[in-house]
Length: 254
Image (cartoon, rainbow, N blue to C red):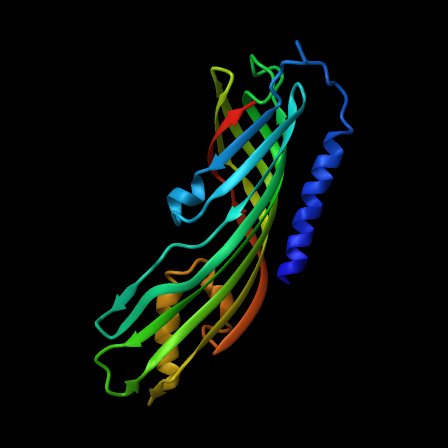
């Protein structure tokens, strides 16, 4: 499934690039010196999720009011711990890893902006893919009827396509500040999860339900792993839903 989603994402990006070169209107003032490239650092996953999330982007101007951009990098969810009523503890995540890739095609507003791309207000279409995995040790506390530890592991794939609205500031012709503040999408979610370990439990159903109640409030989309409110020892599920894109990037124009 991961390979299929990655191929679809790459195909989407290639289509954007190919369609962009079919556009007319490559008339720039002083075209030899006009700076059409911006290399960027996407700070959003770095600030929100993990300091390991380094995501680099590149934007190419292909006409006075159009451009395309691509982004790729490492992606993982943040650490989380949880203790519930001194009876259940979720320890720090391990084996965390992942990556993301995205691409968009931008239309800069000709009448609204005083300058040509890549400066000013724009809207665009985009596609993105995120993959992440992690494991958590779950420890039972102060419960004589349950002995042992559990290991919860999950893999998450998200393929999204949508539209975006943003604004890029070009300062002194070289510094770029790129903000995407509206980006609704239609997304495909695929989850694979396992829950196992050396646990002896008198009332297994109640205990599994307790684990479910905790994890669904911590892990985005965890409800999609269950059927009829019960968490299986293994599970895989695909679903459709709505997503949202927001991004803060800084870059260098050249």
